[in-house]
Image (tube, rainbow, N blue to C red):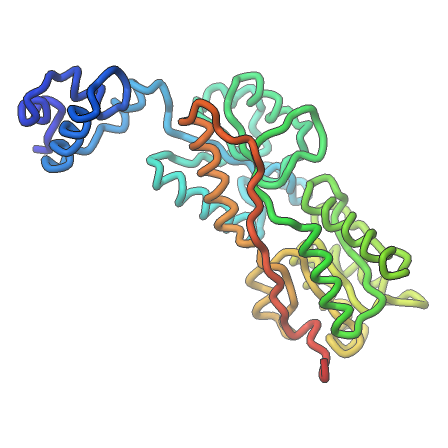
Length: 339
């Protein structure tokens, strides 16, 4: 039979109340006594009952996550988009939550914001927030701590965030394309309703002006799929003065651009360079492989949970943002011979 707090009290020669305060970190207990109780508990192999611990702390030890800035057409009821990036964010967050003895709960877009009350979560992570949605307002009204991956692009709320420096990586990618001999890049992106797309779009425009170019940008309606990428690329590559490189805000768009280039008989990378601002498994296996940005999505998810746990446990947690390093992964789609 596993040991309980009565066994610890007898072994450490203290009261039940002292054991409870020492193990929970609550109440006034001398540091030497607290350490002796914890050492005794460890030696006996004691493990706290999570349900009892929740009752004492008043916390459910559950955190919620919602992918806010991505809906696949009418499939807003989906818990998770069909994208490697979001799966990696989820895996990183779930692992970190488990390390802190918390469960991660996914909230679908179809859930009415008022029903968040019934979930009794301690905190929430909003992925790619827009800032003005009803769920965010409900979380704030309930006093539930929120951390975002990406930054809200609208609305009155500000939260601690975890993100990449997408503007910097966009400029580095464009510099890479220029070094490979591509001088007429175009950007294909979704509307800049989420911060990472806005950062890429603004960086592309500034970079173009800095290099004496008229920015060439095309927006695709949601969802960003291979089909929508190919449809936009068809018009772009058939123009009288087509671009010699295409940078996309999403990996599936880049796959669509490649498919259309191959349909038109355009050589990649000889005549056209293709790069994506988001990496994905498909980009590593398609022929030719596609240059992309590795965003370290698992670390983004785990860091978001760390920030949230800090909000839940510290009296004056930091509100500053955390920037996760990203790196350009050069592949065949931009590797011109002789460059």
